[in-house]
Length: 304
Image 1: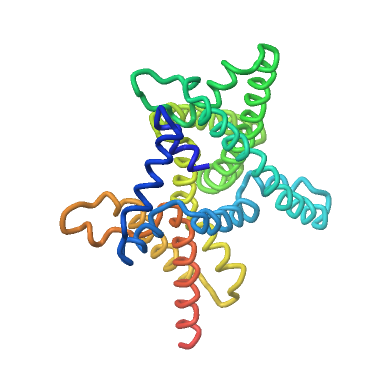
Image 2: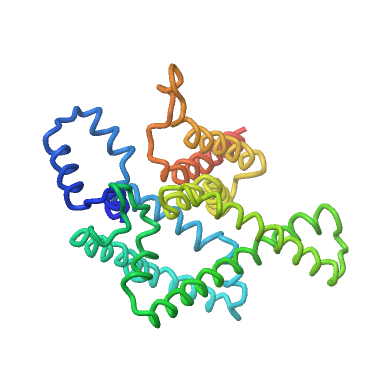
């Protein structure tokens, strides 16, 4: 998938791939350079570890997933839905990634069909829409665009609904109006959904200039949700962990996440203190930091 994204940046994908490959073959690298490359490159192992943690979080604690579990009649049916979703995730993801692979193969053999001019680069996210518009018949184009819009709406409305529900139950009713009526609660939900929709639209417009939406989403997901999984695992696995252990773990985890997020931009003397890890590892290291620090603090307090 990332090979495809790299190739789209050049007007001649095949020549670029060959030149890059020859550079890597011809240029010897020291052990430290190889270690640095392993940490920074988007390798199979980086994606595998990231995928394990992000999907453990999605299936375990994500509100848009949990609200579906709650609709099940029994716990057993909810468990079935979890395992069914987990088992279907791999083949469905393989089909989706195959689209990118097929597009890469199609345009690698016919680079003149790409919308390039004077050697300008092609954004990876623009390749599939360009293929839909230029290569599919009119009827299929309309059906595919309608399907994409329907799929996007079905995902967005779940996120907006769960976010508005959290704001109502965990913020508004908890701190402002515990005895809010049904009518007032619905008004809060509607207003919150509208505000969140506007904010999400603004974020989407701001992401137009990013290199690839998928990479940007994976990076942001690791940053903003890297600590929640560690906190839930701490409460689930350790029976001795109390508030002090949880708070300490969260504070350390947030500091680690901030360091891994912003330190790569450090320059000068501070550059040597920058995070050496791939940005996909934010959720992995952040989760482990919260979980392990929480366990350590709970163990120390128990001995006392």
